[in-house]
Image 1 (cartoon, rainbow, N blue to C red):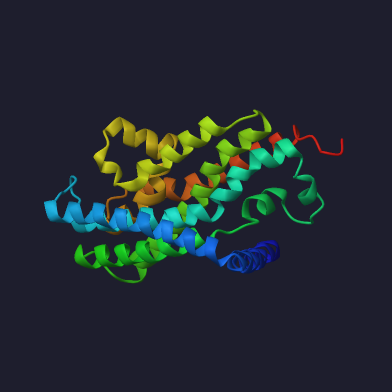
Image 2: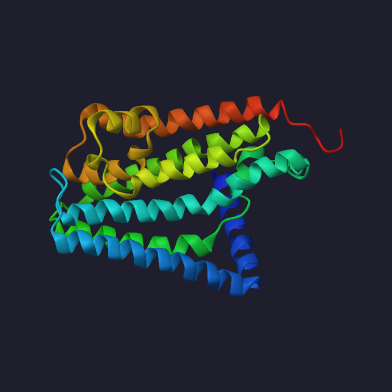
Length: 265
């Protein structure tokens, strides 16, 4: 517990210095936020078209779809917090820059993947995502109470851990191969499958996206829990998949570190 508290405080310190660093270059910070807000407008127009057309997907009404898209937008903001750190891992490995972090008295994986937090991408997605979630929740007439809210937040937290663990794996390959550009593109495309409810896909594809590469767990399970559409097994998997993939990412990181060659060696 003390170790968890220590790392939680360290996240706060890293967030503080990341924000201070970003504000030193305010034009870049504002530009980043402006670009992200432009993407938000496009996504909102996308949802507006669904509303205007009265499109439904299976049991999902346009109000439910708004909730699911809002969850995707919110989780995109969370993903972008450490996406830049993920992308920099292959370059750090090739240039021997990990040496600087090896001497720190904290987990190397934690420090490398959380050292810089991108607030310019988080804030627009956070605001837009929360707005769409609250609006869709209310218009769809979904239950409001301690259990629904706690369950929704629980699966959001599980989604955060799964996002970190699942999408870190391709970039750890930077320890093994010279270029991960193609893998990064596939990873980005995989994330974009979440921009609409998984019900738009066929049964076989949903099974793959839920139980093999569980990207649909990230943004679909919070809403499905509210709707009472999660089976007992799915409820367990929604909590277990993040833990499983976190363990896998830790194991893969430790094995890959054995291949790392220090710049001084």
